[in-house]
Length: 435
Ligand SMILES: *[C@@H]1O[C@H](CO)[C@@H](O)[C@H](O)[C@H]1NC(C)=O
Ligand SMILES: *[C@@H]1O[C@H](CO)[C@@H](O)[C@H](O)[C@H]1NC(C)=O
Ligand SMILES: *[C@@H]1O[C@H](CO)[C@@H](O)[C@H](O)[C@H]1NC(C)=O
Ligand SMILES: *[C@@H]1O[C@H](CO)[C@@H](O)[C@H](O)[C@H]1NC(C)=O
Ligand SMILES: *[C@@H]1O[C@H](CO)[C@@H](O)[C@H](O)[C@H]1NC(C)=O
Ligand SMILES: *[C@@H]1O[C@H](CO)[C@@H](O)[C@H](O)[C@H]1NC(C)=O
Ligand SMILES: *[C@@H]1O[C@H](CO)[C@@H](O)[C@H](O)[C@H]1NC(C)=O
Image (cartoon, rainbow, N blue to C red; front, side, top):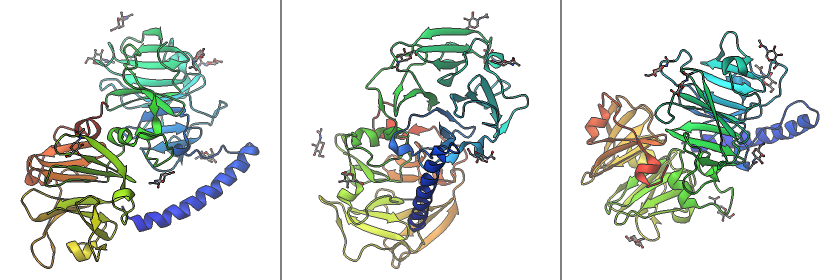
């Protein structure tokens, strides 16, 4: 979204990063500040957790990455009291305590050497940091990783700590510890629980494991950049189909055509799920939609054409092999839909000729048979205020937010929704990925 601004900012950013990098290389040699890490170069993470707001936090050195894309921020911007003590200047482990009835529900615990910090809403709790042995008796210092594991994922409400090849299950209810050897798993440098799955990071790879047994099922390790970071094209060896199907990074746009083929766009790539046999292909956007290049805001299909929106422009492609851009396009979004770009999401329901356009927390209707096109019937979205992508097909409306989607039987039920329906996962439920 806001591509032009983004491009300009990117340039400034690149220049800044370059300067900062040079500065930090210099500083590093002079022992002042370690270099700013780039997560697309293949990091070994120090710690991973989720915030109180469920945003994944990836920690490396003095830096923090929030979410699946974006630049590094200073860790002490979010956790200001870290590194004020005489201790090693990197985090060993971090986890969010998430047991509803515990007094430290949603506190973020950060482990450094023999100390543990407890943060709540980015403030250090009184009395912290404390010795790990005081807060988690039986748990060793200098940990590698930590992860919360509630019942029934674990037999008790546990926090799992990792150190070398050992794991410790700390029972938060009766503060007892059970330790085991985790022979089958690589030594984790970071671990986190995300969408009820348990991930151990080691090097720039990760494995999904069973928290009770430590067993790894399925084809692991996998590359962290493929699933937890938005890094296009860092390696020639990536299985793009697998990466794009299973990525947890949000989609930019999604639509289905009259034959039931599904198209989903993310960054530089798109997925296409065949309407007949559900096979999924992935390719670079540039390979099929050359003029568009990458990073769309919204896509909808109407009468064998794909309307692809990016910033203030609308590209109209005929659905064919290869897809062809119609003469005279791109035109401005304003010219074609009667509304200024950028647009967040757009869709047409089958057998209708109304394009439903979502911009911010409002939705508009554009009658595609009328001339000129005007965006009419503006109304607020009742519940979901930030939509990444949306589509409509004979089953109803699907609204994608982050790596989830919600299903509504009708447009009216979506616009006026009074409660959030069941969450489905994009990777599993749309693309048949196993996690
Ligand atoms: C945060 O850390 C950086 C270096 O790591 C330091 O320059 C800065 O002063 C720190 N800020 C605060 C608020 O402590
Ligand atoms: C929290 O609730 C569970 C059952 O709901 C109970 O087994 C556990 O002892 C409680 N823990 C605390 C710290 O109160
Ligand atoms: C914390 O641990 C350090 C060294 O491991 C020890 O010197 C100190 O006395 C401990 N503090 C408390 C309050 O137990
Ligand atoms: C894991 O840690 C143990 C104990 O430090 C070490 O012997 C082993 O080589 C490590 N394994 C890997 C794969 O690094
Ligand atoms: C603590 O809880 C676990 C699991 O609920 C149980 O197996 C264990 O015996 C308990 N330990 C003590 C000392 O109560
Ligand atoms: C990815 O890299 C390949 C070869 O290195 C190049 O041909 C292709 O255009 C790149 N794609 C993107 C989206 O940057
Ligand atoms: C799926 O169907 C498409 C045509 O709709 C065909 O091109 C493709 O080969 C089929 N794939 C499989 C695995 O059957």
